[in-house]
Image (cartoon, rainbow, N blue to C red; front, side, top):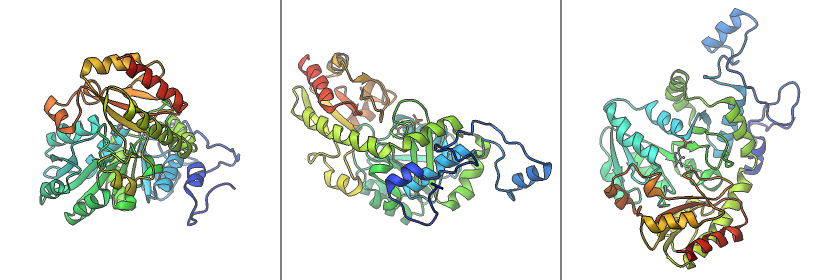
Length: 397
Ligand SMILES: *Cc1c(COP(=O)(O)O)cnc(C)c1O
């Protein structure tokens, strides 16, 4: 009762609330939290059969756990992906999705505008193991094409990208990847599965930091890898079992409950972000606002084609440098200074000194990350209060 029938098509909201639900014999309304590291067997024959894969039961929570399985199944149903595996963090998802199948001598092309941790993995970690990487301007399709080598195995991107909110053409890059015999991996954190499902455009693997909008309430770290069954069987499953980036059942349970409201939260955040972006564009001391839902976004048309709404993040340039940016952040009374995003609480970030601090000044300049750039993650507060807060801070400068 109450579980989704397999093979039947349900709407996104239904999948968010009931996808993967598997009730125990007690018939609990909410998903059960199996906070256990291991499982006991009735007899050694069962243990043997489980390790051989002849009995589908659970063995150890590093391999699989009933609560984690519910979260994974719900994520797969939401994304329209054959399977999903949850990880302890978003970075564990990214690192695992790359390392589980790449080997010495392989080559990766990645869009240079990406989350700081992802860029570190691609630029610094992979080359240590003999996996070369090339960073390209993700919006330039010729740069992707020119980057392809005979040993290219992965194209990796994030759209909208952090913090520049540039939009990359998923379908076009997927075609380039497949023509080269490579896989396209998309970090879909900024769009969330509510706004954009990269597999519909040809992506092979999608990764999330569930820490962001999926939890969306600042409680737990988590990540997800979505892929096809063959990739899971050939690479991901055995790598995860033996290297251990598994999520805690408790965190998976928090994520399951959070997914129930993901659509409502993301839509409200997008409404608020759109209003905030329009107000900021009229504000004093703001030279430019970047929001994928605005007509003046350089790739507004592509954003509309790939995403159902503009997202919850707004970036903008203050007319000045670090000093002005810091004075602005300190003048905010409601919006918190934080490097996180996708939270119910609105959060302001100064990328130059935090998330993108590790990049060289030249790398930041290439991306358009200046000392006056701010990234705002718009939350669920009353948008009029957010706009008031931003305006009083701008007026104080
Ligand atoms: C936060 C984030 C990550 C990393 O996720 P964690 O859960 O913090 O490890 C990866 N990619 C993007 C785009 C992110 O915003």
